Image (tube, rainbow, N blue to C red; front, side, top):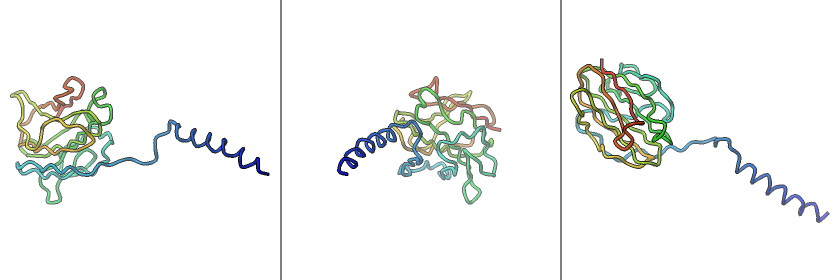
Length: 175
């Protein structure tokens, strides 16, 4: 009878090790605390998107209705576009890679960096760099930053990471 518990111990240890080394993803996710960085003073709402931070959002627009990758403030004010740098973004890029905004209307870019490498978001158009409000220096994630974007003329703009400008790029279409 005393041998039974002694034989069960190696079996339990083997099962525990197998469970810990399984390749299945965990059943939970980590959401970092909100950034303590102040929002820019250009009048943007700074409200984060209601979308899950890792969800691909296709091509959201800055229309009054909120969808993945964008939202509008409760008072009907400026919209917020969310750009995510998922883990491995230095080789896979931003999510999403296309965004839409309304011409002549300021908005906020909410940058959610989930990657433990330095990243940021900059914006440029045919006339050159667009001055964004907020802390635009690159930072190591996970963390978030809100960038106040001034009212832009209709056209096509490129958003990119200064550290990884050839891989981490996207197109902002302003209509």
